[in-house]
Length: 401
Image (cartoon, rainbow, N blue to C red):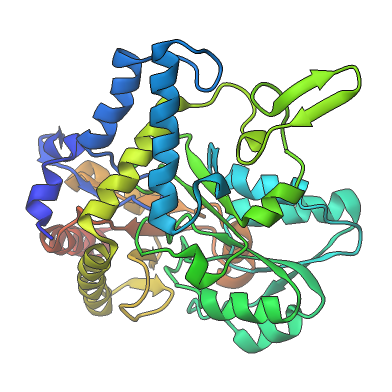
């Protein structure tokens, strides 16, 4: 994997802030975009702006062709059938579709972990308030380790298990295959939040046997406002749509409506065609590089990051210290606000990290007993030299502030 060549594909990495090259370590929030994705999105607006599936003229036909070709690329990336992949605007929307359309009732139990992003926590808390569903959390400790014994007791009687595949705080990679098997053995359906997993590792929905998978485009080199909800065909066919309107029906008469087939019945209204096409291009880009090479490169960066934190005084790392984690590093600096750490690194060194609770308020409050952490998160275009520079500047921060 030629990282120097890959970096040439990203216009943002050619820019400078305050006269310095950008060190972009905020990839768990939003990844940068290669020119191949940007060009493909612009192609829709410059070459064939039209509606998908509505008109019969040539521009509309081209839009439909590119839109469905993007769906096929994404399906190939996760080893799904195209009609099992629903275009959404985010992981959040995908999870909300399931929470609203799966037919959960009063007393039904949903199991999550205590480490979930708000997108995979609030829908179930809301369902508990709205209809009296039960919501239980299996434990992940301060080191980010999943408690399988606790899960074995919690999963009994659950209608749905909904867990993240990889944490956006600790970088923990969950034992998804084992979780799914145990859930299925207990008669539970499984929804996986793949927002932090799919961009970094080969994801095979068949091998992992997950029932549903939600992930976002903006974390995997794709456009903002794009995402995918995967579901097994027989489950999606049974579910009613979340939203209804244009493109969700075959016919409407005084006698009633005839819904479209999947996935169209879930894609109400005019879609983000440029975004979907761009997401397809991002999938092709990642598959061309190869997820095994991406994972290998990120593992090497993770080793360097772990070594750097091990030598750093006055700063503590949250989560596992093993290189099999995702390249996500939340940390606290003694007697400093995480926002101050982020601001100083930005202004003094053009290093971009995130600070705050990273949409995991519950885990920060209840388990870390923290009002927020600083977080550096890496991706395929980051380098060992950037890691060394990050620690050089972070040492100065911890020493002087």
